[in-house]
Length: 476
Image (cartoon, rainbow, N blue to C red; front, side, top):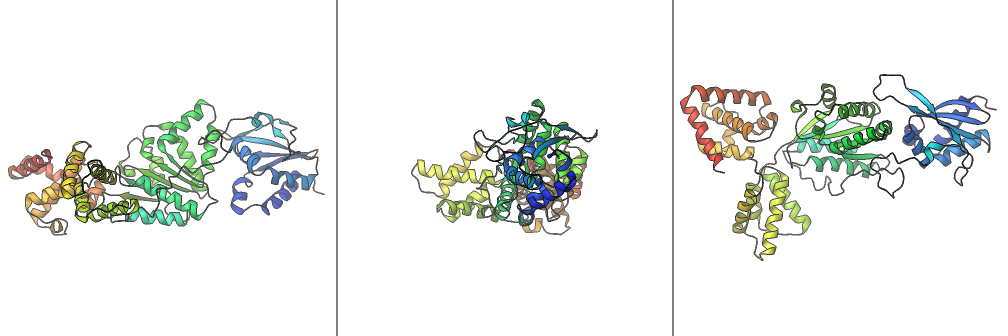
């Protein structure tokens, strides 16, 4: 005869463990602590109300069977809910939830806390009418590795992402931070990782959320006094994907709550995937303790796609839509729109629409007319490729010699001018500019910009170079 609470609970856990998978047992039953046993009433402590509700929703039959097996049909269960102080400034304490008798077909002998029976849903992503605690991954099924075109511009990020999808939290890429400018495929790649993980590991809970949505949910939890439930919800995720992490800048409370969630997930071997429009070193308004954690794993950048990748992206989209257009038109579009993938695909859609509405064949002339209008009606950012072309044309240099390792004075100055104008006219990071200017680092780009500024003040001929090249950009 088992007399102590520990003995009873140990036997219950043994029974439960034999009837569910290892991961579920580890997630939902390892954190439970037994408090006491008195008159066949077993009191257990759970981390939160959300935790309690999940057990009630998914494991109450199993839990009831285990307790009845040990204590008999008249056994009862009482929950004590841990109210964790998420900031760690005080000792956590427990609130014993009062119990009532509630008989039902599923659990006739288990007492339930009266204040929780009609409680509001704690899943911040819940859609009214759906199952109470169902967690939707929020992933877009259209964003997959299959339709993510690989090129030199994204090979590192894609390879790291695919490695993570095969072994979430089992690589050194945790967290995986994907960064790059607007329209370069950050959201696509982050979703593709999540979709692949869901296919390979259907038992894992994957969640994609924008940083803005995360912040809104946090504010709402403060307003409704459900902050602990918000934290525990996110602590239950196996693979957390947060898009546009730079949105946390200057939001101290949001950063603080995310810091604790991040620590919990990382310590419990859960995968974290982040995206940002800039590298950690360029993030302002983000606390150093968070930035240091972003650097624990891998930061992989997405650069502007080179010409060959842009052509491949267009051909892939046309193939998927079952459309054929001449190769010379595809190449013309790829050469004309180089700033980002989003604008490139937008230009293709505009061309197809022009052809359909005006009943004209797709040709170079139609593409040229469309591009002229498209560029005028979009916010055009000068690309690094275009800047290099302007500078090379001005000095009568080939792109190959420009990107070579030669130290000839005229070529070095051309590189420095290209770096200078790239910093002035684009939103690219210094590392990205250097990578596209012959594989240089960000320190070389900084040195180049300082050199150009110094020569502009001291060398009249060099100042003329700058002024004449600037006029070419102003003519765009």
